[in-house]
Length: 117
Image (cartoon, rainbow, N blue to C red; front, top):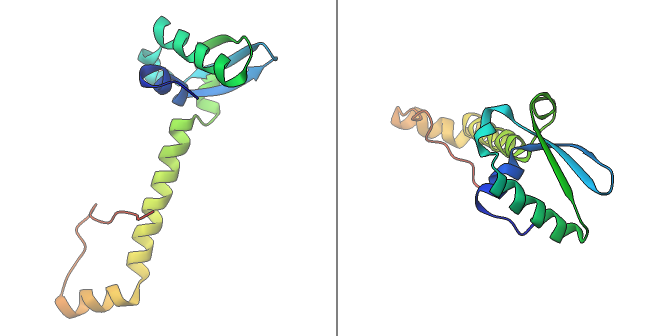
């Protein structure tokens, strides 16, 4: 979608509520309500209209629906946490790593393991 900046952040923190072919209803995560602004909403609406090829009315509410559904930002954070946990488990379960730790009397520095994608 051809939006960036604050409009993109706004989109990333919204959950889908409904679409009737003309009106798109989104719910903004209340923890980032400060992202909501007339300019950002207008740019997001224009980007959606461009991407969908039709006139779009955008309705953004702040509240409960966003906490019940996964926003793109929450999905990305969950994926990052899952990749991090897999990387740590891979290091913890690797026999070569165990041998290196034993041989050098070493230990991993907490937070130093990073997933490679």
